Image 1 (cartoon, rainbow, N blue to C red):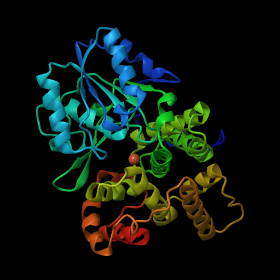
Image 2 (image 1 turned 90 degrees about the horizontal axis):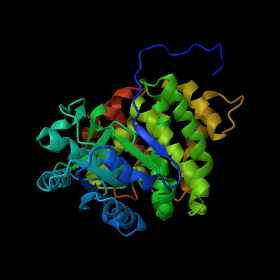
Image 3 (image 1 turned 45 degrees about the vertical axis):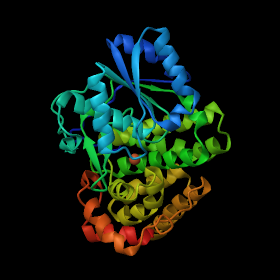
Length: 390
Ligand SMILES: [Fe+2]
């Protein structure tokens, strides 16, 4: 943007929690527990994190500081409604007064759900949609262990309604944590595939926030920076898993994308991925990686200038190209980028058959993320995107 370009002057709000970014930020957890008046903390995590050094280290720190805690680790990838309810029961029965989440998006979303349920005394599905939370949750500290979801910064919690096989989106300022301790050191124990999937999730956040019809000058700035950083560093962070600079840049990209999408919301990549991931219990980032090029193809004509700006950030040479050719090159670049980081699946290879498409589109059309997509989708449009992605 030059200093004479028109700026967007529609009213926009920007919400972000307090966060600390940097190496060893995780070690501040006990200090923040004390600051927030902790008597006893529910430490929400999962079995994957329990196998890393980070959980034991955090527990030792709490013990050394005289902070009583109880661990809740029954959290699945794509966290389930009944896990939230079980966690809330344990929170109340144990006399906790705050929550500490150590994990990826699933853990942090489950922790948010536990917090909401524990103060509002209703079943988690009652909070589905936008601004449905009556009372604030207890203090929540998040230590993210992946770089993608940005649940530690966002106004989103995604919970799987297990019996109904779909993921509900809970969107509210009341789901924003009190503090995020964002530490690239904890990323060094992530494997290549998890790094790739979570990185592609963040890239999808940035794309969707940038072309969202609720975007602003603030979210655009973060979204574009996220795209450039992720594009330049995701593969290198996979190839050099212990390099804290690469991990740090990818973490920063995830944070920028998180600040962008938390405030500009998302689009059809996420509405389609929520339905797909909920029905087949697939990794969220992998679903996004598969769907992103197809949604760019679908959306392109409604946000041409923005996609051309994205192309420049990605280093795609579109100078002098006609729009259809530019679109083709951007789509091809995304496909080659996701394959370069090790994601070569299609919906077909993930087990999606054409007879599932109607069921998936039925659920996807009701997802709130459609509302901010630059092109308003019909159910037939969503079905057609699924078909192309098989
Ligand atoms: Fe996402």
